[in-house]
Image 1: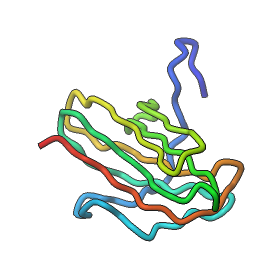
Image 2: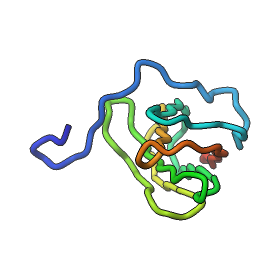
Image 3: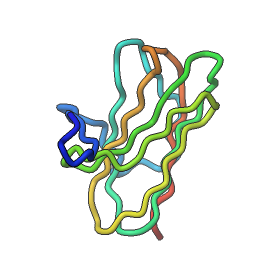
Length: 117
């Protein structure tokens, strides 16, 4: 849904994997065709970087970051072996991370993130 203001929002998932107690990186994740992987990452104010690494020859993956209200904060969609989004977070919140296969690609990946100190 694109509001009149032109700000990108998204229908959010019913559930997302909680990364609260998870140490980065999260290796061994797999995206299947016709699915999306969603993660919830609590962050404090500051600079945040989120990256997904994979072998693009096996399937192209894309990365999007959303606020809890559905506002898209960043997107990376290239044909490289990594997708990376860097954002400045104004206040503590939970970021929603979406990993999706381009044209329903399947692939394994590693999700990594750097949080404010």
